[in-house]
Amino acid sequence: SSAAETIRATLFPGDGIGPEIAESVKQVFKTAEVPIEWEEHYVGDKVDPRTQSFLTWESLESVRRNRVGLKGPMATPIGKGHRSLNLTLRKELNLYANVRPCYSLPGYKTRYDDVNLITIRENTEGEYSGLEHQVVRGVVESLKIITRQASLRVAEYAFHYAKTHGRERVSAIHKANIMQKTDGLFLKCCREVAEKYPEITYEEVVIDNCCMMLVKNPALFDVLVMPNLYGDIISDLCAGLIGGLGLTPSCNIGEGGIALAEAVHGSAPDIAGKNMANPTALLLSSISMLRHLNLHDKADRIQDAILNTIAEGKYRTADLGGTSTTTDFTKAICDHL
Ligand code: NAD
Image (cartoon, rainbow, N blue to C red; front, side, top):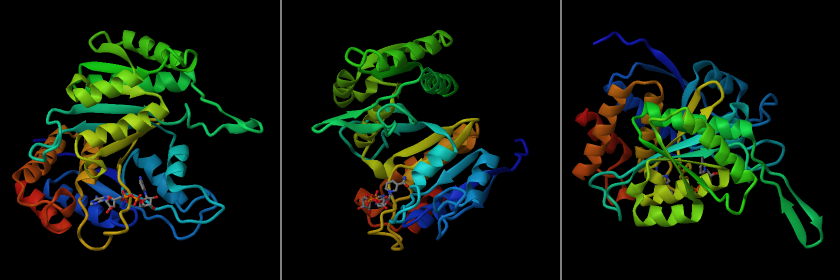
């Protein structure tokens, strides 16, 4: 075995159940001897004028410096004159792709047991450009922006991901038969990138047909790449295929190779501080982070320990129908390690 170098990573424990599930990740990493040193940052209690949000400039600098981080759920404080935390992170770190691995957890019964796909969502433009106005009374307009630069960037990431993760196929999801210019350009960019990856099969699937295929037989898909709005919807649809948002990890990819992994769920204020939260989504997100760092051995080991603990069924948190506390469930995972 090689003496691994210590890697510094930023950790935002976040709000609500965030600190409890972040503690679980810290413990599991310690037990698995993952060579990561956490730089912890909390959301501030006043607006930082340099970020116009409750996120401190120092915490953003930490992610920029480390290039890798893990984020718990954050609850944006209500009030005027500041940007939402997630929007600030996305803008400041230029997080252009949202990646969600979605696979069946053995032993946790859902309608399907063979889901194993990745959704990759363009995260900066499309229908979410925020350009809406009233043309005249009773008529409003929303601009869907698709650029060659952002489309090539996300397509490039999708094919690179497929290649480096042993995946065989990339499906571009679109509605170019109706959105001829915008989705047409998105597809053109995907085709251009596909040519550079002859070993990866490339296909194009119309969004409505894609939904039907996903619900009938999700095993038909491997890696899916799509514009912002379709990605928002399809990624949640896929989370539903494997048992819900509480089990779904995600990772945000930013300019210059930044990776900020995060659970998909929120801060669950109803169960915060009660030692009831399920840390699985954040743990699986931390595994995305390890894979981004090419620490595949550690990622495999931790993933096996989580899957075995859930499959065994002895320790499960309340959301999965069990009675275990967060700490008991975490300890069971550590014992499997
Ligand atoms: P939520 O995901 O926090 O909770 C929805 C339900 O799911 C609740 O009943 C909760 O108890 C349960 N739940 C969620 N995660 C769980 C876990 N790990 N283990 C067990 N049960 C879990 O959604 P919400 O109530 O709509 O939002 C609460 C707060 O979270 C809001 O302030 C919202 O803005 C914020 N939020 C943040 C993010 C993020 O930071 N990425 C995402 C969504 C919501």
